[in-house]
Length: 266
Image 1 (cartoon, rainbow, N blue to C red):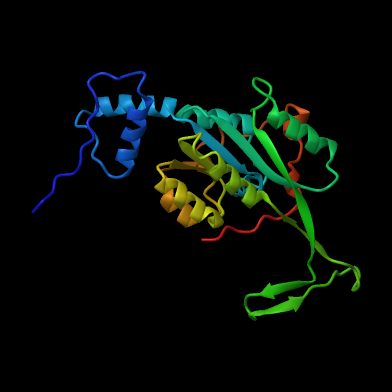
Image 2: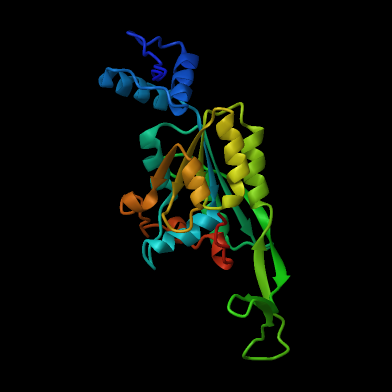
């Protein structure tokens, strides 16, 4: 016996005060309910939902900094242009920038972070959350061909101490903020490729949150891609958000340039 799909009927007139109706409407569509027969009604309601949905944008700066090189070796994007592009699909409630920095930051880094926090028209109005870079010994590495660990040495001196930088706290900070504020937003926009966020994404999705990715095609966990309601591929509008070098702040190097971000899992 065939069972007809559930249809979530759109109202003949939009009740402008009833935000809960349209939030439930969007959730029903994500659960598989059929769209209304009238396509123009659906498009009108979809635009209204996008305009009144509170979206939280969380940025893994290390991922974006490294992934942008997949567009071109000298390519760099502009955070203000990227925010403006994202807001074409709906307004943002808040945006957070997560990164790890050395103990002693440079003037260029301080200026860059100050510019990120600045409201328009000067800056993109992004809250910065900065964590400490941790130094770890880098005297050994894993050889995939030999399936064993091998010793590393500096060609300029056998007894030189080798160090590497690791960012600590960024992943935990992103997950903590997303879960702490879950009652204050309707959609989560993630700029990260790390599959370690899968459990968080699944939990928020099950509670009815809309999941969006704003990422480059390079280095994004397929598990995250599969669970996202929408994926905004920056590669598709890379020229629109390309960074110009007309000012000292936008031309400065990002703080994440000092370490190599690990490839995403999943």
